[in-house]
Length: 393
Image (cartoon, rainbow, N blue to C red; front, top):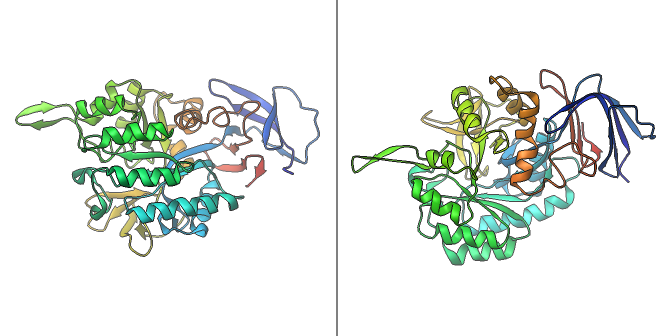
């Protein structure tokens, strides 16, 4: 039995308002009462928020690792370490993300996910797998291993999906590649979200992708084409196309490093808070104090350095992953002009929940939804974390 938890005297953040010094009750893992007045029901645990913010849990829909582990390490222990590490920073739900690899590694990740999901008691809840690659533009591969980069192969992805359709929830690919449109349509048949990523495409490629089910831009701006000259003529890139298609959502690495403040402001001005999800895209060094690390699996991954609050390639020619946690994302966007605490939390909760089609269960402090709650102060320091009714921190 899960404990009954009562939170009193907190500023409860809802999608468009705040209940000042409010109270709520979680029972059987579900939010049962929310009130500006005292709740008389008895509880096993009473938390006095003392005026701190009471927020819906943070949802990270793109994350690779943390606490010294990476999902590509391919063990249940590593899966659990990542989930438990990020839970301490307010992440109550996540989408474990792979890197470009071979088919066998993907199939192995599916099996490990299933086992880890059964044992994940103290970490961020798993929403399903996000496969990032290997169907990418070689020119926009970023830190992805080029030996795995290729066009979509129907027999390959069909086998993967048929074996893992219960686990795979999104798959990122470059829409300009031969076979990518058919790939997107096939994913949609299994309710898997196709996402535009690591692409050197054009406006026309994005339109074709959108018409075949691609409705999200993966780590917007990162490894993605903008305006360029082709045969002397200016050509609209993926970035501009995503801005122009209102129905396409974006996820952004709001660690304060990957995107400078003016770009974040531009994204929010055009796409808005309801179409922009904040992600960490964190690798294994997140939640640690190391100055060297590995991107990908620890046996065959890419050595990187950690400095300036980000992972970089050894020659410093490119970023090689984020080391952010979700509390850092929140602190970053709250420094932007015109972004309120309500707006920031919506991008960290309800917007990603809608993108992943779980908004009926998660994403806001609402009666009947999962008891995913984060208490933090005005400096975004995390004080308590509740995941599906279990007090984790």
